[in-house]
Image (cartoon, rainbow, N blue to C red; front, side, top):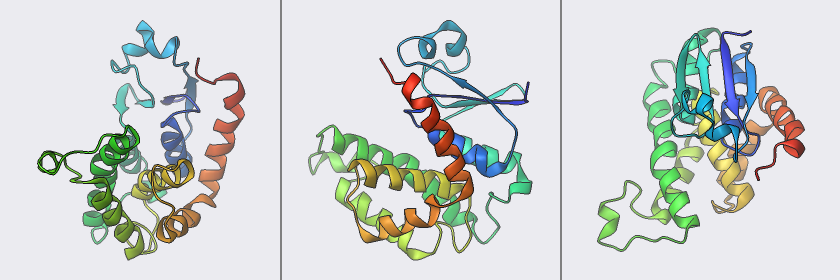
Length: 207
């Protein structure tokens, strides 16, 4: 048994965590959960009471939420050089949590056909969907990678949000988004992670 376990489903955000794990080069075990059964089991709720994936358990410690998993693994495996340098740190954390907060909220609400009124925009961290998308476009255009000229763990999370959004139409197909994700999607770790999850798809489709 490895000291590190990934709980996931191939039709979930668990793909982000697997990509990050592949980038680290760490050995890990995988537990695939079903939406209608094992994800809500007593055993898994003891790991993540939300009954959601992904989660990782590393040396007995649980980490949930994809942005947190990416940041944690970058620090836990420093030899992979995925954590930010001093010069990269500000952009790294800024855009990692911008994607996890305002972008996630804006995309989810927009997909659900919810548009805040002008008065409500002050209550929402993203303001409006259009404003959040414009800021994200500028962020991925500023440098080759989100924190500078080097790939970091923040690119795993931000890149996943952009790639997913462009593929499924929750983000507009802007040239900057396409170009940014193209720089990421040819990485060996990304290809390995996708191949593993794709191989699980036929037998793990949600009920």
